[in-house]
Length: 107
Length: 120
Image (tube, rainbow over all chains, first blue to last red; front, side, top):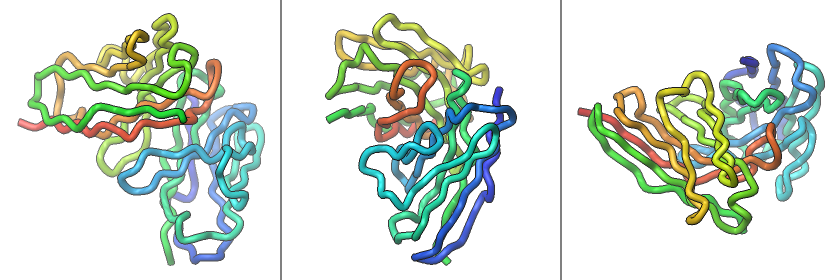
């Protein structure tokens, strides 16, 4: 299986901050990476796919980048509704795997 | 509008069987893979397996192979996840999600989740 390691596991930030979350794969995944946002008690929501493509309706303050084994999710200016848990997922292999999650909390 | 609507919360005893459902609407149900994802209390997301309702081609995560059965009834646009003998460790939220394209792909739409509680 391809292992996905997210960092940090938790992060405290303030409204207006720029934050970056990293996801590292145990092998190259050729940009086959998605990012999801999950709020408490809710289903995950797709934010980006193919490492950098923004899902329709997702604010442009969210962006993704990376290649090979290393990928990042950046939120350019945190809004109150962005405080949530974020997961990466690789779909390079049909044995899909998720990162362990990054909880973004209000400072 | 694409929607995945899951069946309601379940409370079961160890050893009991269970089948939960996920009904798709607003798109061609037979043309998209449907996956199942487990989330144990306070934990992250785990992919369990996927099914293509068009021909019932099914793939399982090795971690869940033999532990659950994924099926679909295309006549009623519904996918299922079932257990023959539940354990306390099956207590979790279970999500179905539509895959956005041909294998492999990300999940683009998610159901609201079904909470399964297994307790004696």
